[in-house]
Length: 203
Image 1 (cartoon, rainbow, N blue to C red):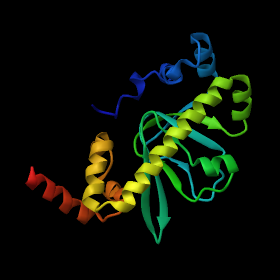
Image 2 (cartoon, rainbow, N blue to C red; image 1 turned 180 degrees about the horizontal axis):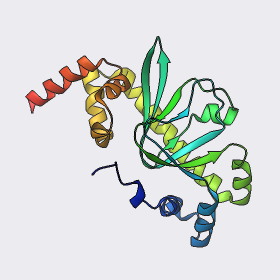
Image 3 (tube, helix red, strand yellow; image 1 turned 180 degrees about the vertical axis):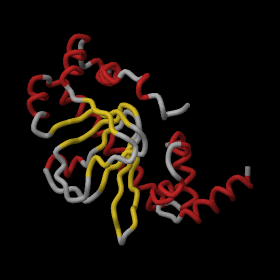
């Protein structure tokens, strides 16, 4: 399934309404009303959504596309996360505390994103309490998955990390450059190539 060239075929308002259908927290009219109020934006491949040092005044949610989080360390980019469809793009600590970012966010693909505004969010939550409940549920799920990934990362060999990546995020293998996958796994591109060749021979 291709993820490029499909932006014009995609209905972001409907995707947002489908997202809010989780758990039956909203009625049809309320979902439609909220979807009409929440900003949705298109971002091009390579576009930076956040730079190191900027204040997290916005958070994002991926309706379509792919966003990468990375740090600049000694002149190199260190990838630490990929956010694809139906995932929130935010450092909740930086966002809620309005701390300057220590990382970058960049679009790996042309993307369609829900935009959360720090100044507007409290007003939306006050008007639509179920929206705050849904947001907290999703934040809790994301934090639990992040903790699981970090625990697995520090206790796994590079090959096991790659196998886990193939199992949990198989769609990203065709969407992300191999050098970024290697960075995400904490290994060099050369090491990743050796691992891939070894696994192919064992099949």
